[in-house]
Image 1 (spheres, rainbow, N blue to C red):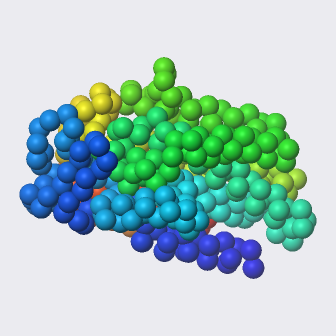
Image 2: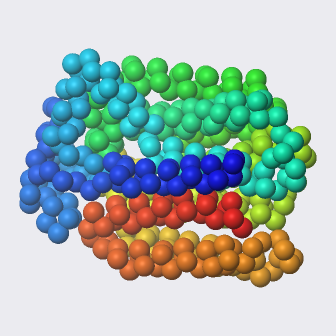
Length: 387
């Protein structure tokens, strides 16, 4: 019953992603934000491409990374200010960046399923009365770590987000800086305590290292996000290697099995680290205007959206080829043919289809392309449980 339930959970997470406001294109025609003076009109969306209305410092062009229906943002801010608990919970939910939360949940479920499949007798011999609470605690620690990293980024990127992501709660005014700091401090304190109490020292060290990388990504004076290479390495390390290795190691430890680098674990560590690197690069595609305005150096601001999208597509396509080559070069029985070859070939075909539909000068199209990169990322975790 555990494995079917895990697949159901995977499906639910993927279905929930379909309506995510983290990937919705702009809809309304007019937006003014406080004293900053941002403004939209229908002219700003000619062919879905944002054009500056007034080339002054207070009326800078915005790029899109989500739903910033201006009326919806105003209503949400007013509801929070009126004391609505529901509105505050919704703001907190947006603060955690739901699309990254889904990635963390999927990685946890897939890594758990993979470790149990790879351990003969684990399902029958496990003490579920002890393991399940520990598993939920581990998931909570990961989500708290995720919230810490994305939360502190929103605090230090408030001004940039008012241009690039005005739907985020700190930038929109739905969440005060004080409450944002409280959420970050609570997340960054409780998460490590859980890991320290319930998991091996190695996992505590890796977890702490991940929080540290997330911290220096956003916080001056280091602020690795200002360097595209360091930013990519940071995200790839945390979301690619540390998360996937840590979950697998934790499950093996919980069932009393020794960790070893099996072909499947080695493959997913390589594949998802490369994939996370591509996400780290493509995440800046919709944000070029705000990044330029605040001197944030990214590959997209350096060489342009079109070239970065082409390069990311080529790299991700080669990553899928790498999966097929891994099957071809591995010992017989190391991987299943259908998911390893057929599954990755299908995802590679989807990638090429998505790229052919991309219009680099359309913010809406760029946003949709980035969303589809995340969709492929989610689908890879389903393959991980089957390979």
